[in-house]
Amino acid sequence: MDVLEEIGKRAKEASLRLGTLTTEVKNRALEEMADALLARQEDILSANRLDLEAGKESGMSSALLDRLALDPKRVEEMARGLREVAALPDPVGELVAGWRLPNGLEIQKVRVPLGVVGIIYEARPNVIVDAAGLCVKSGNAVILRGSSSAANSNRVLTEVIAAAGERAGLPSGSIQLVPLTDRESAKRLMRMREYLDVLIPRGGEGLIRTVVEESTVPVIETGVGNCHTYVDASADLEMALEIVINAKCQRPGVCNAMETLLVHEAVAGEFLPRAAEELRARGVTLRGCPRTREILPGTEEATEEDWYREYLDLILAVKVVPGLEEAIGHINRYGSKHSEAIITRDYQSARRFVSMVDSADVYVNASTRFTDGGQFGLGAEIGISTQKLHARGPMSLRELTSTKFIIWGEGQVRV
Image (cartoon, rainbow, N blue to C red):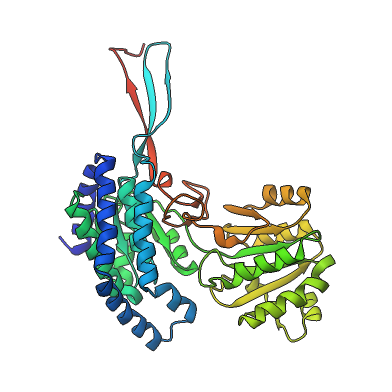
């Protein structure tokens, strides 16, 4: 039996036991995992420094290096995230609905774990801790497959939390890392239907497309964020400026950062010069439509490809639009169905925007940077689902469960 087969078998066996664990055992495991992260912080950071050095030598972009980097604050955040998940209600066993039939049968619809969750991800070692914590609390075993760029960080983090979880009572095999980072191992994981119940890719568009096209395991698409902010004719421009700067610059290398700015033509002449000054002062390169370039001389030309791009960098596409309908049309054509925002004082415009924009998360007068399980009060999240089945938006505990029907009878037979 090879390494992937062994990992899959152990995960399947562990999942059968995980689904029956009490909330107390699962919460104790999460607390132990959090304690272990802090206790082994120096080991974790030493491993991460090796990955960062290799990333710099290979020419990794500053945005990707930021995703890869760990520091004491981020380790503390991971530990805090585990404790927050422990404090959340346990979804397993929750009665979703129940009723009694005229023949006396009692029907119950209850939440149950998915089983074995596979995660394929790129360059973000914190994914290990977020995914493991959510899977443990929701009663799922997890198989993690990271990229070579974070190999050292991934290995140490998995060792730390898996050992801590087992000390607290989790079955062996609950949290596992695929030690291989070649493409063939990823493709094999995508076809392990006998062991995996669902596969969740977290990374760039190329990774997600590959998993969706090649996997025989059911896939939940997450992550690609070509997010838009539309500044309406009635917008409070001071508010709009603050939101735009936050959405683009607060952390440009993440999926909920703004990648395209749309501005109503009635306010473009006033708003764009102010926004451009602030954005450029923060290192942002602008790529604009013809009207944008008239207002902002020296701006790079935006190509058709730019409207589709998730830059994950200090680059922003800018377009002046005639009105609300054109903004909605642009978003629905080019967006990735992740997070979109309108800045407006017009209630009817806001209502039309939120009803017509086809995305998982739609904002009125707020930054797209809030699309996050923790920011939504859900605790950690395993990703932002941009599809409509089986979940949409930040995926937390309930989104990592399914349901089953339990039927109680007293000897009834069908006639």
